[in-house]
Image 1 (cartoon, rainbow, N blue to C red):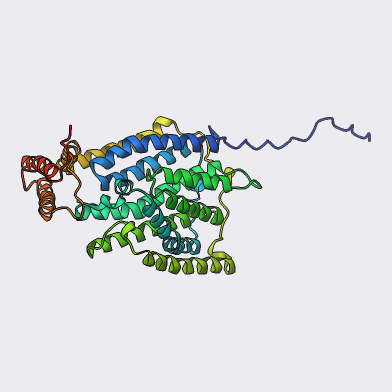
Image 2 (cartoon, rainbow, N blue to C red):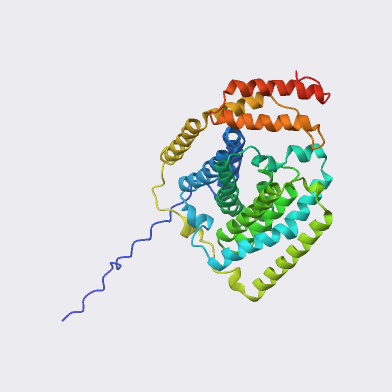
Length: 395
């Protein structure tokens, strides 16, 4: 039997795996362009909605500017938002550690930094950027919306955008250092708050939140620390207001500031020491890689992504107009007819009139008093109080 000739044909090769889907733009480009767009929307749409109703405006801005815009950018560029930003899963120990660390950091660093900034800034600048005015003249429902907005919506949505998108997009691949991205993100995060007096304190917070995100590989510890900071500051302000002790930081006893900072520093040091001895407090997981964060093709269209968010934002504004039309009208009227500011040492009669005007405004907003009655009294007080304070008439 003759030997068969060797075959020249090659065995079939397995098909090459499909190339992973690619993002439409690089993470850095997406982060920079998205931040610029977020700033434009924050100043225009967000600013307008917060003007017509501050409590509603905080939720609207957080959900539709920071969360909504960020979510659409990621989906449009072919990313899975939760995996890309580090929203899942939530490490319980690290998240709880982040919350407690946020409380300690507030007293150890935020309080003294803010106190120093308030003491050095001119009085007119401190009054101009006094965030406590946000709580003035609000109904109980609006106070609840404000408190939950700054302690729930802001931490979640801002960390999603600034740490999850901006910081990740700016962070170079290992072994390059992430420090520059951490610092730049903290500065941008603080600048978005448009508060020069609180700028340094918020940069420190941004560094803390960014460090937690880098260290744990998850967004939840930074969200928890952010929530703790905002919650403690809001609760302390409301307690001081209820006790009739609200005031600027420049009026605070420096010894009280030093005592709080000392206690906070002890707590902060103890927490960081515990983290060194128990790595699980700050460990747990590595952030998803680019391959794990990519969404399968085809990527959704821009119109398909925009439609549900635009519809939801529009419906929420329509609901606000239906529920609080009188309040919106009053806000526009107040902006056009400003009142002279009364200092604490202003004549008691003027202060009593101003409080009565607020009562009349609340009644007009609820429909229990004619709007015209409030308009007339506000215009009268504007003229009378300017004369009493020796101020020139407005042009």
